[in-house]
Picture (tube, rainbow, N blue to C red):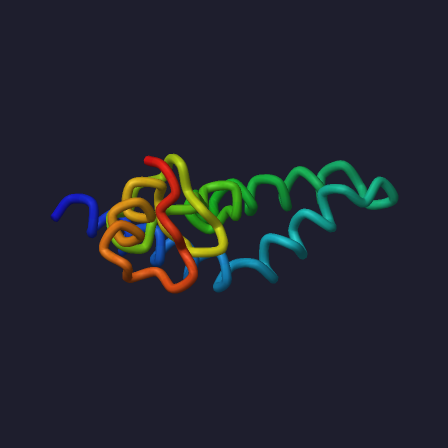
Length: 101
């Protein structure tokens, strides 16, 4: 069941990224604007650091929808290689033909 919780954790991160996206973009715009005073840019930098870490898009990982495995992830199917092979062997993925595995 630990794997399933990683899927839930990743979904929570996706919600947080969406929730804070506008605020983060506005603060980054202030930080990168060279025409603004240094103090204002520094305050924006501190405010950005106060936001939750999981609200950053770099914290997101692609994970298998069934197992939560982050490695060997196929984007089109949203599955790891292990689940792709297992479901393919059972004939549950349309159009996937077992050639030699």
